[in-house]
Image (cartoon, rainbow, N blue to C red; front, side):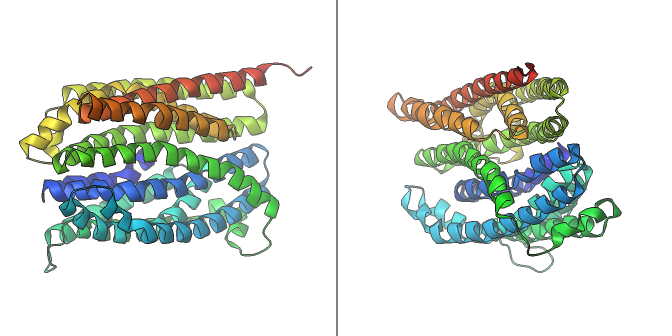
Length: 429
């Protein structure tokens, strides 16, 4: 949970520190992340194929298979990172053509151009993170992420506000701080895995050549649908940011505050989802289906409890929390009701992310991707658009659509997991 939370804290710190420069740079960071997050998270989703395969191989006590998964995962993620960087750089000027405020776009493009290159170290980091977490060594990624955040905060301060003789860079400075911090994070975890005695027997994972087309195919059959899951979900939130931009720069800034806070709560339960993937995969390898279900539902109960508390914080802190980002009273007034809606969808968000993690542990990714697409793109977003622009609910209408999309997704995922694991409990005839 701490490593997942630390992973998004760079973006949170960027928003907190850039918000004090002004509402337009804050809106610019939100718009840049529309293009960036969906691509980055697709890459992260593809990397998720490593964890269930490593955990299942550990359940089978097969060290050779574990090393092979690491080697193939590293090749996939490196190749994918270069493709994704090229894709963002080729398409970044689309931001000029989606009817956003000109001053916001002018802030977003240079920032996006810098953080795009952080995809490469992030996916290298993800390779080793998913590998070590698949072996239940979760503290390694946590230390790497926390360490990178410790470096990131002073770099942000220096670059954004122009300290130590450097010029004031504003949002661009936040981009440089993020890129440098992620390079250090990736280098640290790679060196640790290579030299640590705990992973010496998996050193073959660093070798090049003798690849298996069959293993590449298996990993991509898990990873690509998992990446598509992120596209459907994250792109839904990104498109909601585009719709917010149609309502003005201050509305977009308010959206960025609310989504930033909701991301913090999401990532805490995303840590539980990672645990669900690891433990469900491990029990699947052992064929202990009763424990598999117990593990998943215990983690689901934890997620519900944690997200209930986050919901209370958002609802009762709706007027205070936005002041941590900006002092503009209009932006704060727009953000406050969005945080009430965020408070209500915390339970759905926690349930759906943990169930997705458990289903990923079962190597079930295609049907959940379809459920996500229907919930957000066929129901939630069109409803949000209608509420916002046809009956003039504005920002509240867009976020109501997100609330409904999340609730439908959560319901579908619980039913899917329960149905699949109930079948596993039945004795074979």
